Length: 523
Ligand code: CLF
Ligand code: SF4
Image 1 (tube, rainbow, N blue to C red):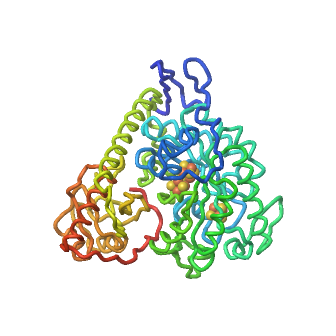
Image 2: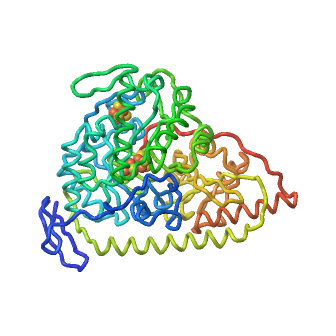
Image 3: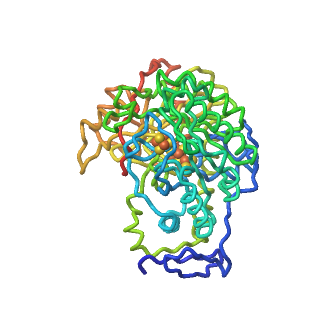
């Protein structure tokens, strides 16, 4: 039936509703689930790559299936955004307000704006189609807290209609201190604040103005007001045991060195995770920075800063700079499948039982992945070497090497050493395979994007790209097709070390790689 929603309770009974906001499960209003009683702890001893054994159990409950707060989870679980918040209360020099908020989005993307009612319908539709979708975020297209009525109305509707979905919010922080109580009352237990500076002398080069309590502030006064409000908001959130992530945009020559100080400031106030993102500043996006030639960082500059900041508070390195209406795993974008028009034609069945069963199977696969990695690590025991390699991986998710070279929209990059395999980022690329043929120009961009890698792991690859990658010094590897990534990276590294020791190869570091500019285009 067009536009209808059915909800199947865990016991299997079903209710049929007509695009209605009032949804009941077994005759009772559905309640918000999630982990609202958990303690954030404000501890910096946990982070994005941490697993069940590394974290306080209450925090693990909060992050274990949140694709942004857990690197490990992002291979398996999806998020979606609803673009219900158009207005903004500040101006960032990397933002053109024709497009989505660049604090959580790639510049140059325009999302489909929704009312809270349309947004709730969309969430139920997506959750019924994508059982691994566990988190709903509001991240624009402006600032969610500059649109508080729409934002909280949306959360209220979703909490009622899809109570097993975690709620997430991203803000520039200016209005945050005024909404901490509401955030807590609505069980929003993950909040991101974009903090690019803690020194107004730096901030005045990033923010031309902020608008606060009916008054526009400019220059250093604007930056001072913003940083004071951000710190106040962060402290209030962590005091209320709400898990906080801090996003920072790395702007070479403006705040790149200063972000180490930002890292210290947010860590001391209890932030859980720090996500340093590269500035994307193409002139065609029409931002102040883009039009004035401000460059973004290279892949190695970004990694060096992330490495420098990595301490007790881990760094998020798997951010994809989503769009404000993103849907799917972080590396994919299925928003085109869920336009309002298409949703109105869908017969939606929201089945808790099948969602739960799907997620149970995901957990079993995760455990198998961890066991395989541990077993492979045992074979490296006693190895002493300073060598570190980067490996690019073509994957569709599930932590496996399961994508063809020519079909990859991005490559995930792992650093492997005697310490093990660690996810360090992703590189977005142009699709090599176009209508059955290899595209030469795309191959050049792929090589530029993974130029710092020694090998690329793929499920399959043709002879032509194989030769060109080899000529560029990047070894194409398809012998681990459909196996787990980290286990395979460790096995490759062990063989590599053996070849270095035997003199078969000479190890050499590789060069830098380019971060692809341009808007995020749906696959
Ligand atoms: Fe969305 Fe952000 Fe919540 Fe994630 S995104 S509101 S925390 S559910 Fe995630 Fe996207 Fe990066 Fe954001 S990958 S842009 S960090
Ligand atoms: Fe743009 Fe977001 Fe900055 Fe507002 S907070 S100006 S929407 S990047």
